[in-house]
Image (cartoon, rainbow, N blue to C red; front, side, top):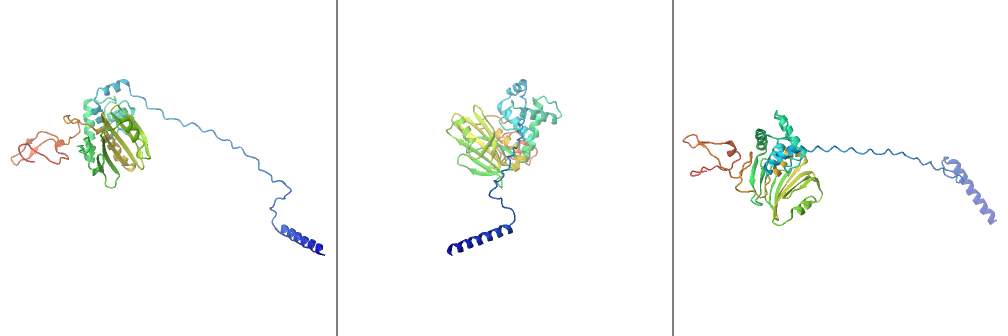
Length: 318
């Protein structure tokens, strides 16, 4: 009796399972049939086309390079800075005239000046370029200053930045919302090549677009966070003096040329007896004036008075 009772229960259970199976939707795969595998689909990959590299700009003619080699390094720096301020040049600082970008900028200026694009500036063209650059300098409040903290000399756009004060190794200037920052630094003992490699990596996350090491200086440009940067350093023995210009990428329209001009105007170890370059004013300058009337009015060149903090006539008063 006990066995029969068990069989009946099992049969009833099986019967219930069959009813459930019949009521369920026919989605189950019979256990006896193997699951059919989908055939593997081979995807034919289209080979990537090699990215066409932009052809390198042709090197300037040897005669053109030689013509600029006859010009002093300081004058080459000044010409390139003037081209940058007038928006003809958009390359790195350094005063290289064996760079096609600088030569193309010269040609563009000559065409804009209704001249022949010879790639070599005549004396008259250089004077007109300096005049054009000076108009842009006035817009940004350009003034060549002597930095008391480092002993260096450079051009500062005083309408764009205000003094930040003395820093640990130099001086600083900053715009109202920190969009622009200019800092000088001085190392009494250091190696130029070692600092060159260090500046390319420090601070962390700095991306370098251009860098060049010269026998007694170097130039580095690139990005640092959301800012562009320009660094220029000069060496005298083991002493190094440099300047860093940082500016928001949103201010490129104004600052790209100004940053090149600031870097190119940087003289780490200025000669106190050297004459100022055309278009540049020294911190202390001298000139002559014509006495206009008995009240003490004097007439003199505008370049002597623009952005001047104090005027003095020797033997009289300020």
